[in-house]
Length: 203
Image (tube, rainbow, N blue to C red):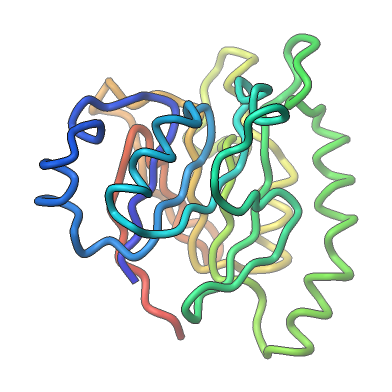
């Protein structure tokens, strides 16, 4: 399955219908890792004629009133064309924003999902293939400034549930010296900001 992943920055080339059809006509699915305008996401999936899966970033409070036309993956297990996805929204809490979590809060979310994830494995024989997050994991692709520090609970998730991939955004990648792909335990982690095309086959 060919997936167009997007996050954080609106790219003019993805707002051009002719360019979208020419360069991305073989895309099967769009995934947003957050901090994306609803109109931008809806435009892309309308032109490409494919579904959208998303998690909210820390700046996506407007989704409460005008949600995008897709599946919100936060704390949700969702299967599409043989691949199973699960999502975790938001960033570390650095002010009073609604889509921010302390380390402890995110840890409780991951622990709270454990029974459903174990049941999913009992039913299907495997945990979800892909973890979609806005924030990076602690110490992997995150930054030193507090608002861009990663979640320790994402490390716990990967150790416990061993997804094949983790996609995230939140940390900008204008500096091409930044590491954007890292293997951790059994997971290939990718900072997909601002957009990345990824080919993933079901097992």
